[in-house]
Image (cartoon, rainbow, N blue to C red):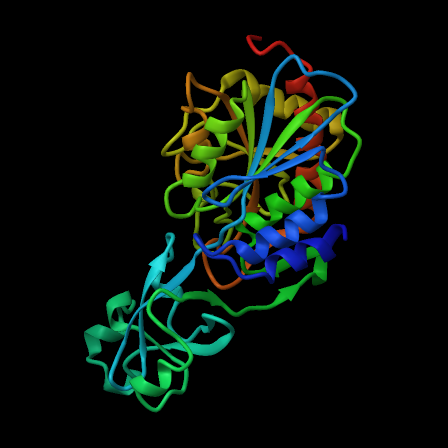
Length: 344
């Protein structure tokens, strides 16, 4: 499976942090015929090794995370409604009224107090998570408990649409990065490389932290999706990056100051690959690089991100052109890093 079909297969799989099993199974099935070796860490991350034509000068690890943001059931009320907490950073403004899937495929909808019962000042505010609930249509607690229990995962139920040169789907963060690594792993490589599909990025970078400790790389490329705020009402200088502007390279975020040499090299790789590339115009957010670059004695790290509107919501949006640019840039950059001196 390749291209948008692979991306759709990954994005429609369910896998919030700590519940990545379905996504992991898909990835293993895709890469098993091509990987030289596959290891599953105790936390559930995949470490795949691919033998290349040459031994690298720089031991390189490429990383993308399998998990998505979502929710988890915390309590069932006497009325059969499900209280929940967020798993990962979700803006509570995007929750009310969204269809969701609970546990082993139970359909539900996120509800709140009806608008005609709200006070005037309440109408102007987003509803806090503590005042929301998931309604699965149960008559009472006893009936709800036949289908769900506290600790069950909750994912958004959304579309996958690839019309007009875009892709609209949930979990593009970071199934798009996973898809790029799968495609790359299926190719003949110039150098040996390690590929990590990490768990639990959204809740603390745990999968990448432990995987980097195990791999002991000299360098790392982190593939991620990042916020594109190129929408109405946002000044250009605050838009972070632009959909259609190519892959995004970060110089700094809330967790990481990226390697300056690799930052410049990423733009050189884009030029060599003949694709567009843009700098992330904000010191904001974070990703698995935050854990990887401080592993053991330190790892030279660069992040290549995909501009995505409506990140961490029920439906994100990316440009197919950017996705293809990311693929070509990462392939080129990986060869440049692996074939170069780790101290250059």
